Figure 1 (tube, rainbow, N blue to C red):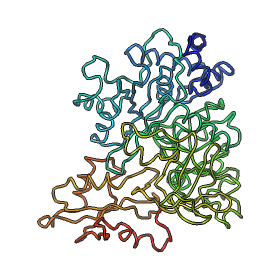
Figure 2: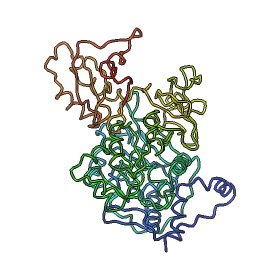
Figure 3: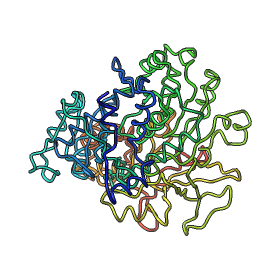
Figure 4: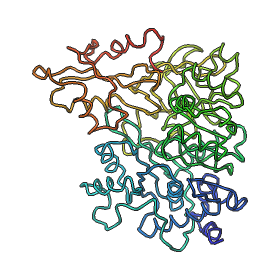
Length: 538
């Protein structure tokens, strides 16, 4: 019961008490206090043989927070994580919020150069890593300019070791507009940028999910996407807010996923389309193995109609939901309902759409001058609501360009029909979505251009049945570099960028086509691959 004592809030005074009173409902840690008080014995997190009740989770968070405080971490400090999905990772996330720190999960698939950029950018006071990633972190942290280099504070801490025994720390009750997380997303300039998300943003996202779903009380949610994805964080929060259970999945493999879903009676399975396809095609797949699943949500990349129809035929008891959102909108903007996937929905286009605006969210489609487009007309998609980020970390110019007049300018092109259903048809920003991962063309083009035998390069997304879109490069060799081939360039890229960003195919051409303004004409480069589909994205 020690954790229960730790769960009691401190006794603030004066202005601090007034501020806390006004924003108490906006504290992310409040859901743990509530669940541990009402249902302390209910299972909160399953991670292999490790099973935490809500009382255990609260105890872990308070102890981990004590560890953070003991090394000087407090309000506004950044705490990074490089690790696969685990129960301790969830504990660390809440421990950061417990002390008022900022949770910064980093992409385990990044190349060292990408990881070093993020570490230098967010300047963490400490980096937690598991055994598989600790050596990388310890090699990168001595880089000049990292925060805390001369403070004596620890650089690398073990996430896979229990926090040291210490007095349980009282919750600092950070909340509201306080920064809760920095989530890194690709950049149009070739450098990942940190999206700032507040406690209020993330709680609003959880409320959106709860409002647009059947009750999650008693749910068992599979955490199948990596914790460095906003999709995972916004999967965790609504289940815990509803008193549900989380089942951690360290790395997706279809056979293991089928085993885990069956073993733990998973009710909610978020799957990007490639994951769903792998499940249905696995030799051990049988529909009855997914008998416990009530909801299957998909997003990150639109799913082919044939794949969804197959899933519906094999799993007729499962409700399908598609989400459209981005890191900048705390992963929510629109959602399609199970009823949108009925026979009529396939006829009138609702099933192929991204659904309608989520609770608390407004959607607009506008032209280049910001004027609202009529129903059915294509324009840029704008999003407004409490889920929208306050901006990019230390990027005022990019923030001002993306977040204008209270609206998030998504860089996606779409159309709204008379019923409010949104269909995404293209990307204004030069981004590719491959297997659920965002790949900005500039990142790949910068890597290609760093090779001494490359004169020019352009990167586009082309349709791919398995991955939705495949990264495709068109490269102009330097005059004396006829021997440069695809394999050599791919190996070069792997040293600079994550493997999923490396072009699946490299096409060598004499010259790149240019627009009258002198820019590479990517519309012309994409046209042979997309024209027969009548759209520019999958």
